[in-house]
Length: 252
Ligand code: MG
Image (cartoon, rainbow, N blue to C red; front, side):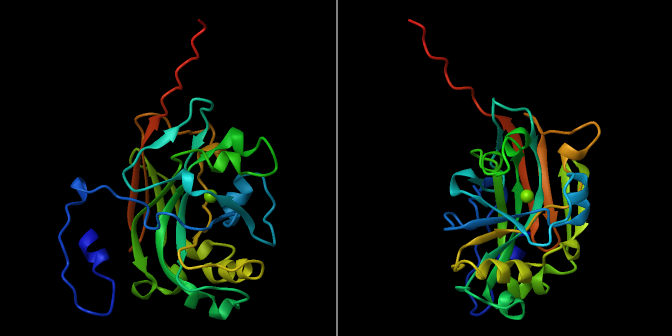
């Protein structure tokens, strides 16, 4: 229940306003993060299904704000590809600057958590060794629905379960504990090379079951609905729509 989750903000008593989620427009919980750091290959079964050897150092890549949408907004399938894939993931949001923090200190720098669907255009992702293009199409990074403060959750979200459903059918199911690099490890490792700032977003990687690795492959298309659920964090739901084709240039 949204009001329950929203009321978790601790501290002072305050007036809670009942908002009908059906009439609300959800924006990403952090509208303009300075950094969106994503982790690839962070579950061994997903690394294996993707044909990668499990790396000993996290595979980090960036997303830009321009790809973000909130809960309920359509994920757009571009007209240049039919390979739009889902990736359900846990998000950690930084609350306090972090530079050179140890794994033991790292979670003190995390304000809270949310959910991400790291919508990926697979053929563009693998056009080059850098995944930037395939991970940054407009309206492919679904983020939300809520931001839940860390104090309301188990440490590092350990023990929580993640499930992704496409049109109601479960396509991914895993425990957060199965991550190769925990939230604390990722924060510590990132802080070894840059200063993480409040509002920075860390997208922690997806488990097995992605459409690319299925036989036959399963890609998202116009009319589908993709949901990512994590215990205590809610359900991030987004319809899939085709992006309108740009008008053809007139040939006089
Ligand atoms: Mg991902």
